[in-house]
Image (cartoon, rainbow, N blue to C red; front, side):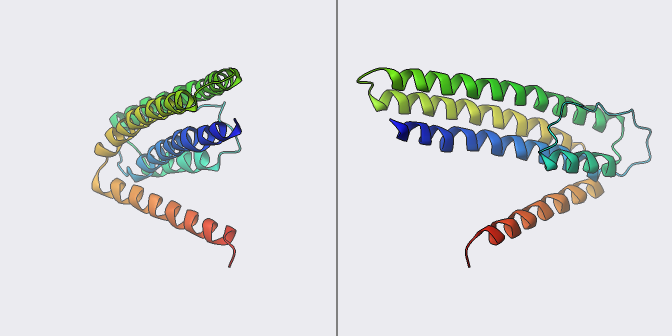
Length: 173
């Protein structure tokens, strides 16, 4: 009975977390790329950000480096706000999903196909949320000028290099 829980953890949590990180990365990148001299409004900042997620600080830095104009900053803030709302819904949804799977597994004689189907449904819902988040951030990216786009590209290239180095450091030689 433990096997389906492992599938749940690997199959659902990973895509949601990856989507969230990608979305946050896109937000940060979009913010860094904008280098215009137009006046900006003060961006919405969330004080409830978990300090254990360093990418959020990097995204805030990217936002500041991009020097977004008013329309770009509005798109950024909308995407960022939607992300924060989505993150709280994801956390609540994951708890609900775990409870639902635990309840299914508590039933004597449950067919694991039923559990697997429900896990597939959760994964599909997660992919849909990820796609919506990605589209919001891509709309920010579409509003950037060429200089800002290059800043975002470099930001993500650096993130990928750092991830590769971290993976190499964890891997046995």
